[in-house]
Image 1 (cartoon, rainbow, N blue to C red):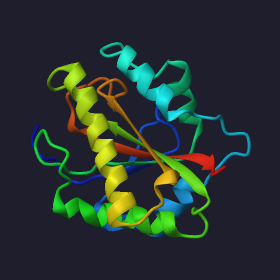
Image 2 (cartoon, rainbow, N blue to C red):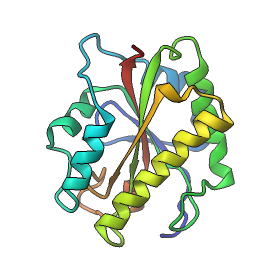
Image 3 (cartoon, rainbow, N blue to C red):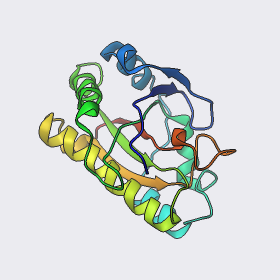
Length: 189
């Protein structure tokens, strides 16, 4: 995998085509308005069940699975973060984006919510490796937010989807499929 340029897109659903914005356009109000659109009757999502379903369905897709299908109903932000090649090391230029996300998560309007970080990959390489790498990258974002940027860890959950839920299914090897999603899971309990 070659390090890819930072592109940011926002979507209301996982299956909707995202609009593309440059990294200079991303700001806290965009993040807050996207992630703050919470439905009162949002479905409960269990991150551990998502991990189980993804691991049990490597190479088969996850979009139609019971727990994964609930995600399309939740507020979310799709962000492509640069990582070193075949690594979980976040490229220094992407820390600005991670910092903007952290700033928004510290805002009083979002501070009472918990979030799921979903890592995705393109279909280059073996499906099992891509799933493991996407989980590790989601964990790396989780760790950066909770340690470097002091977002309380009880508000963050991470899961890898690998290549199982491409944003561009017609081109599974496309760099567009390498992304991170931040999904609002609702109020902390």
